[in-house]
Amino acid sequence: MSENQRHPMTDAPDLSWLFFRFSGRIGRQSFILATVFNFLLMVLVVYQLVRAEEDEALLTFWGFAFICLTFGLFWSALALAVKRLNDIGLPAAFVILYFIPAVNWLFFLFLIAKPGDPEPNPHGPPPFGPPEQS
Image 1 (cartoon, rainbow, N blue to C red):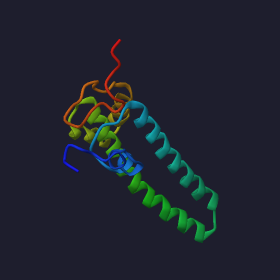
Image 2: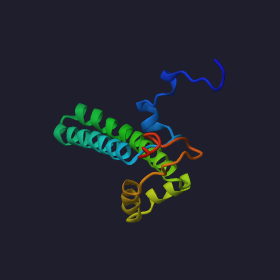
Image 3: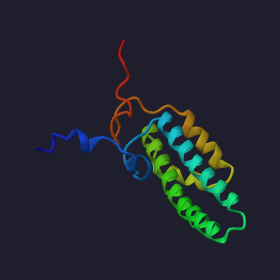
Image 4: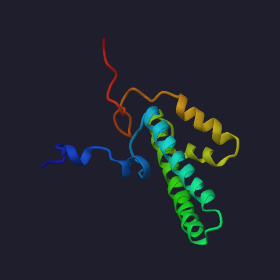
């Protein structure tokens, strides 16, 4: 296969790309759904921690799960934000706004509200293809 020919199965985005890689672009809906999924995972683990009450084995297990999930979701949130910035056409360095208290919520709302660039950019084509011409 030449460089210009691509295998369709290897080029399809998968969940590891969506949540953990920094390349490419994602649209607003994908960003929102992935963020909601991450939030629900954290709620589930916190619920299990609270439910464990005084069972030390369960507290240890869910405490460890909470720590691991926190690191994983931190990475995932950064990857999602960078891909969203790629879609908007802004530099990935703007992801630093996630670390500024109070500004991080405004940044998150901006990522949700700002439509992506409808044209291909250095990060790839629009997530859902070019706009329909009427």
